[in-house]
Image (cartoon, rainbow, N blue to C red; front, side, top):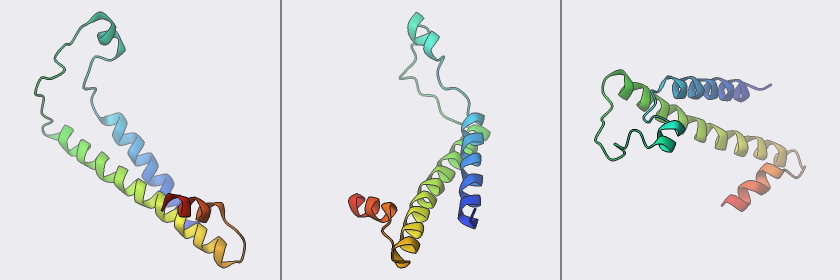
Length: 96
């Protein structure tokens, strides 16, 4: 396991925990079936700690995305420099 794998696992766990810390913004499936909570378009602003958790979740999700792309490119470049064909490099070529 390389250093970037460990960082990737830590960032993914942080994203999971921050997602679980966010409060529910709706009543869920039971509210949809029974018709409860029809304030879909009501203005509810996040304040205080909810806003901080929301921003941290967004930031770590962006970090997760860029870290995943970095690992894909880095491992693809390392595999292609050794002379073997890499599926990661082929996937990146299709992506671009």
